[in-house]
Length: 127
Image 1 (cartoon, rainbow, N blue to C red):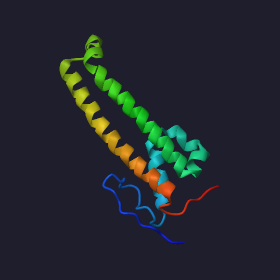
Image 2: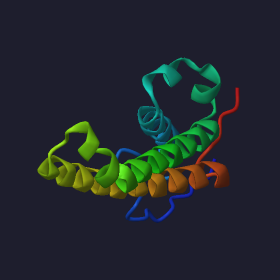
Image 3: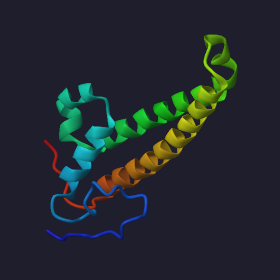
């Protein structure tokens, strides 16, 4: 078996071994599973096929980004009627901005891991 070691991109998740290295797909699957709600751990199809896990993680993060963007865009008009203080609103807006940046980094990492899984950064096991 030839092993291909890909150069690791700065957005490559540190929890995932470099593509082509020993056991890298296991670390990729573990990291991807951790990005999903806990209830997804019970779905054997996702667990047996890391490419599907990557696809679902990408969809999950896209939905989270939409939710955070909506919360960010509506904070100034929807929070004051709820009695939320202006300082809390400003802190909430900063929190959403930071979360959006973090989700963007995660999305790039998921895309890189998914691409490596598809292009064969190691061996693919199909069950």
